[in-house]
Image (cartoon, rainbow, N blue to C red; front, side, top):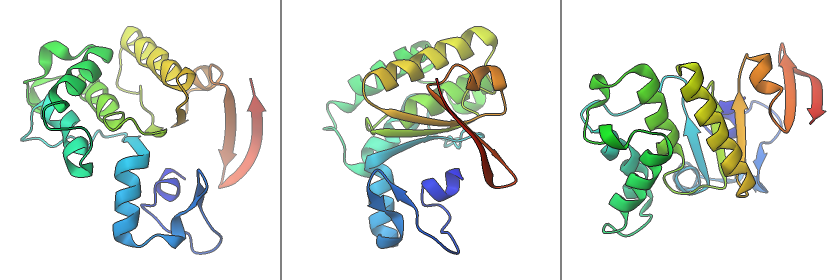
Length: 179
């Protein structure tokens, strides 16, 4: 589902429309541009660039999308890392930090370009309970600020804390609850 909603995979039939944009109508270049500007993704396995520091990983989407001035980017990165409690590890390589820290760096990176829509694939799965709670509170802050945060999780307790829960089994919608 996330691959369809982010344009990574194309449907064999039907159409995917995200925030009014038909993804089928976009060329590969236009889709890449849309992805860089309009969405953020917290991958289950982080996808951090191993040779870049935590801060450089968070800044990379800004550079790729031409967002923010080069002078403004370091302050934006510092703010994002502060939000996920990683400021003190900004200069560290991903291999030097824990899996939970890598996941928090990926969360900061997903919001780098201030996209209106952020997708999370088990976005707190590698966190200890306290860090997971802090991240979940951050997601609520994003939503309160007007973002849409769509998360895939197998955790019923986490799902119960969202504003809307959609349950899918075997590719079919089986429940749609508004909280």
